[in-house]
Image (cartoon, rainbow, N blue to C red; front, side):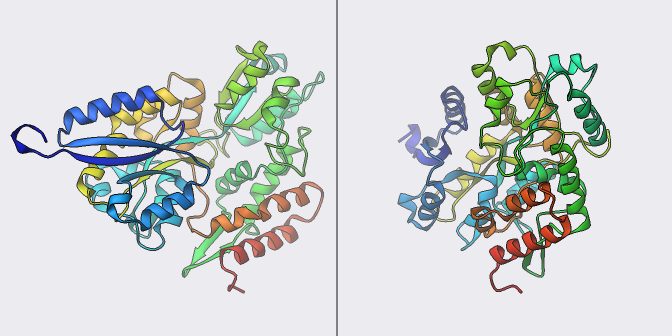
Length: 398
């Protein structure tokens, strides 16, 4: 009990392991509780393994057993929206939170129709990690700004025993960016029905660009970027470029300390120099369960965590991209994060349907990519993969 008989209420917050440092959480808690003397924060760190089932169980629990705020992966939000167990935060978003400035790759998965359930918190996405020394050897004085220039530069880097780029054949997140950049999509919704759309002209153009770029390196056509881990290949060989999140540079330098001063970062180039390529945006949203007894106080926690002060502090501390395009300057002094921010402004997420997890469980996009890179007809294989995506999204669709 506070002076004057005022009661202190506990707001339980679930955050994911390694999303924020312990020092950040300590500072945030002290600052928040100083400004909200009726609230005590109970921040509980969760593991990613098994989190979907744990959150689903919490959303069905009684108020006494449920958290009041939950951090979730941005692409997980559609799964939690099903069943009507999340609080609609549209009014707060429109009135106080400048939702028109949110990164689209975080905002779109948190929305169903006109209702906003997931509030963007932070983002991370792929950039090009490159070796400055190999660029200099090839006479390339600045990173490419367009996709066509990227192809030309990568071909130039293939000299003297160097590999211009390592790009695994099944890196479907990178492919997705090229498809979106061409105006296509992995799947599209019409009249409440989702259908695979890899066979659209735009999506086929994206696949053709991926084929041309991947052919400039020795990446396997039948494996993704983790098999084997591309960080090890980059560290061990004279590879000029990989497409990855900037944080992978730490693993590269740990394996080969001689590269510590040679690594640089640039956004994945777009079709024109004026706009970087679309990229898959990963990251987290914050949700408020409907079964909370502390809706007003939970919303105040979300507002504080996603406000400019603490969102930019988190981005600087953890090398993330802030959740708004207007806050990108907060990471301008860090080359990798700044490159991410440029791409995140045009970022996207996987199709916003809870059934997308069924697609990824037996991912037909990977098989499609391998077949095309192996010489199969792109249109035929795209149609086959699109049918499999459609069946995974709704087995009743014919």
